[in-house]
Image 1 (cartoon, rainbow, N blue to C red):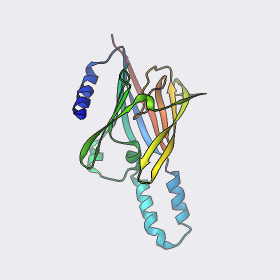
Image 2 (cartoon, rainbow, N blue to C red):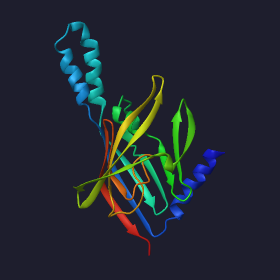
Image 3 (tube, one colour):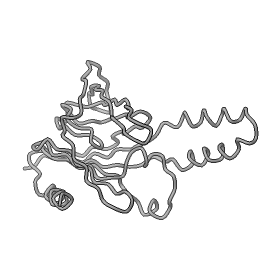
Image 4 (cartoon, rainbow, N blue to C red):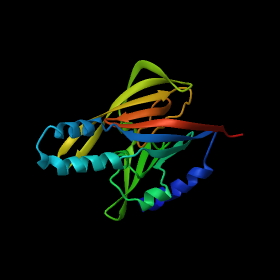
Length: 215
């Protein structure tokens, strides 16, 4: 039932724009320097490490940048990975896709709700969170990104897996020049639009911003 309601809200997104709307194109990339260092270290050990070395080279060659899109109005946003026909045909181990995610992320400020729709084991899952569950620390540090004045904010992403619970450092750069509280994935609720978001070794970077005021 929740997924049905989510899809209804998703469709209503297009008809509920008010006052301010926009589309942001991001590029997602992974810092692979640790993998490169590992390969360099294997050059100095025995040849029986050649299988691991070849596997690491394969990960490096398959790890490509990915395009993402954020669509928003004054109250709602949706964020998703763009998929090309080439990606559908070529199945590879793209570390960027694994870390960046390929689900659909939906935020509704009025209801203080974050929804994530994703597929696992052949089934669709819908995960709901409260937008205020993410605690940002706003810092008095600024820099220019393109033509926009941006400010730094930090938080932590809680990750739970088979190895236990751990936290990833998150750094966001947001701009008050675009006063909407949205950003990549479920990282929202800042005083302005997030133009750059770094989650551990993963980076989302805005490469194109299209804004429109409703008449």
